[in-house]
Length: 320
Image 1: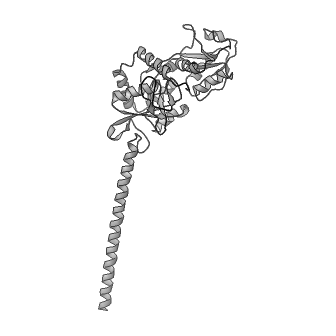
Image 2 (image 1 turned 90 degrees about the vertical axis):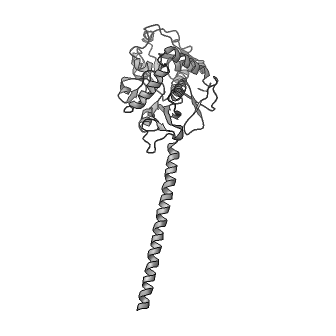
Image 3 (image 1 turned 135 degrees about the horizontal axis):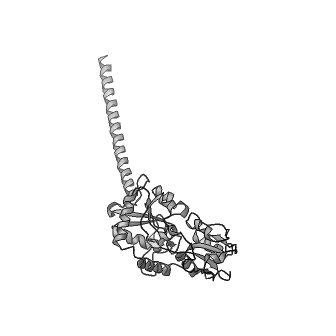
């Protein structure tokens, strides 16, 4: 009996030791996994995306500091476009588009570069479809929109805006030989029943009604499609801003930009002439930082704005 008791005690001791070793092994594995997970999370955060995907101000750039994460179409020349290489004819460098092997440039990118440099932050450009540009910002994919966005009353209810970083005129683009090239007033279109197109989800849609006796045509997701509709005879006129129209006629030589006489064009269109930078409605801290950077750059000078827009138009690739 004594011998059996001793054997039982020895076996119990061995089992306890094995369990202890097993517990230590589990704890060690968990710590190792946790460390690796933290390292992976740090690497992800270094790209400027919040770990929980919610954004919140500016992205963190790790040791390099904060990141100005900007959303834009990259398909709205001359404000922004996509190109294959980083080289620009003016000697500047285009910015890599986040998660892609192509680059972004144009007036908006030039503005974003100036702001990031003034803030001392890195810059990250995100390419997004126009009809989801606000939703993507609200979800935290990026923290501000620099995309030729007009500050309309409707948008002010959803976003926080800076002062304008560009002022644009709205205009009509028509096809050569259409008979509309020489009009100088919206009133000249009375009785013409012109088919009108513009970009969906923009303030231009509400301006269409100022065109007398119009026929509402299909609207499109991009301005390029609007100009193509006019070029192909699907629409008679495209209602878009002048810089974009002037950019389009550089590569679509069958198009003409209509020039209105003073006071005979669109009225009450301030929402689409004041081009501003947007942040999430509750992110006024970032909005104010961007505004301070604009102020430091003296970016209320229309001459500076027009000079940079002329440069953007002059260097855009032919494909845009």
